[in-house]
Length: 293
Image (cartoon, rainbow, N blue to C red; front, side):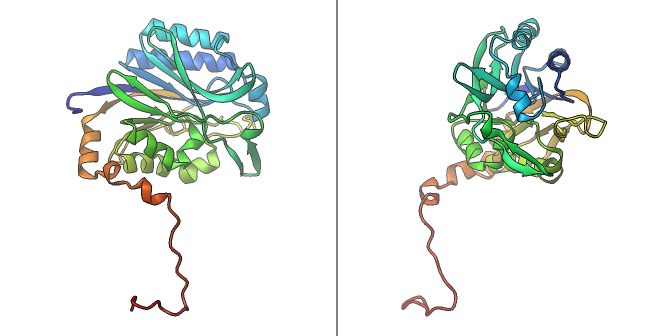
């Protein structure tokens, strides 16, 4: 089924600051660089256009008509490349969401995925209460490019495997995870989470990322970097490390998805009807029921 299908995805990373103009320059350069290297789709990081505290990002939330979005639409049209802005504070008439915008190769806005799982946590002494400044999404999103189906997620979503299993069972062969992952949690969990999502679903995972600055204290919070692309069998195809501005086009051979899912047909063998039931409980030290000896 997937014989001969190849998708070239631009993996991107940069040090995002509180200055949208400077961040936009990095985003445009990444799109142009990936397009020159043959990308069909370019994935930009979460909060790549503005990275500050939640309150600061809400204050500078973008709309679909913001000049920065207009310029990204223009560069998509100029390069003929699909661009996914992996996450931004998105101001709508009645709410703010963390949204990944999908821009078609002709510059049209195809739609947006609103982040389902909001980062309410305390990490390294810093409290991240995203639900206090934005509303959670409630819809899954699939994106098809060149006959390849992708599932779109954002950052903290990666800790919720049920989401990725649902996307894979709905047809996703590539899972996109743009992120602004904290440096503390990134060191401990980033690679293992991404590899797990790839392995358990027999899917490619592509995760663009923001990265920390060089000077202590210059960021509202330090992000990990290490934008990764992972194959369906779990091997890392690309890792952008700590680079302050980098991109790489990764060629995804969709035959690898079919091989992984044929070898380990976990999507067909999963039993959600059983998982939703209440587990039986046993207590040690009590009498063994008749007939169980």
